Amino acid sequence: MGMRREGQPERRVELRSEVGPARSTNEAPEGAVSAEGVEGRSWREGNALQRTRVRTQSRVTLLPHLQRVREAAQHDKRARFTALLHHVDAAALARAFRRLKRNASAGVDGETVATYEQHVERNLHALCERVHTGRYRPLPVRRVFISKADGGRVKLKTLNEEAKRRRHTPVRDQHRWLCQVLRGHYAYFGLPSNFRALQAFAYHVRRIWFRALYRRSQRRLTGAAFDALLARFPLPKPRITHPCLA
Image (cartoon, rainbow, N blue to C red; front, side, top):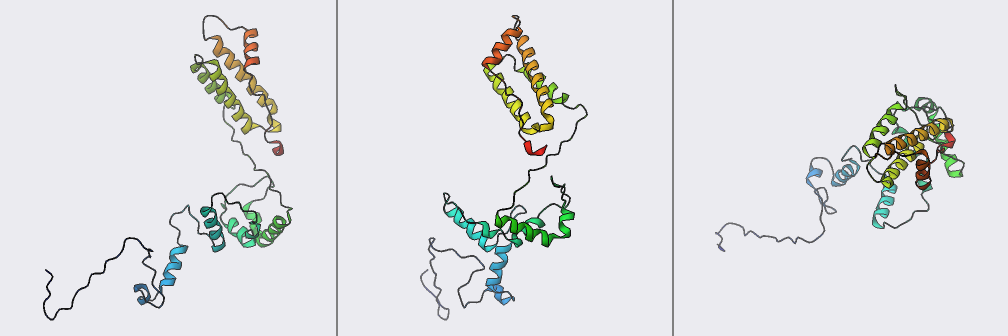
């Protein structure tokens, strides 16, 4: 140990520090040739291929200018971008159009992907012009309802069973739960053409709550006592949440 035989070159061991700039396998100093360069591909081309490669299907490769915006947002979480409209050009709209599902349903204007694609270049340039001049106003999303065989009875039946199960819980908790149910129903079905249906649903919810409290104890709840309870714990009234989808 510590001795070397004659005729053999001396081996030198280089100690590498664990702290320092890390390089990838494709990187090489300027003027040097890597193993990939011997095979016919330079190290710069290898890095370019790595940068454009998408690791998973959910990730999308960003363009250089969008990548810089992303890096700036990651560097400063409180940064506010006030001028990003110049990134929305015809090419960006074309990329967004290519990501649409070909079998997507038509919107509120009746436009489908197939009809829009017939004059896609003209439509995208017109859309880009409206966006930059401030004349573009997005249309509301069209909501499609799937009718059930029993209509709304399925939900009322489930609601009645849940009210029976909760009838021995505090009244304040029951009221909080029913308010969540009604607000969610109004938020989903709140169309101008459904206002009478919303009123009917609110009426049935009040009846379900009255029956659950009526069977709560041997002291039967009267209508006047239930009205006083509603004055103390009022239920949300029907309201239109989608006025533009009439």
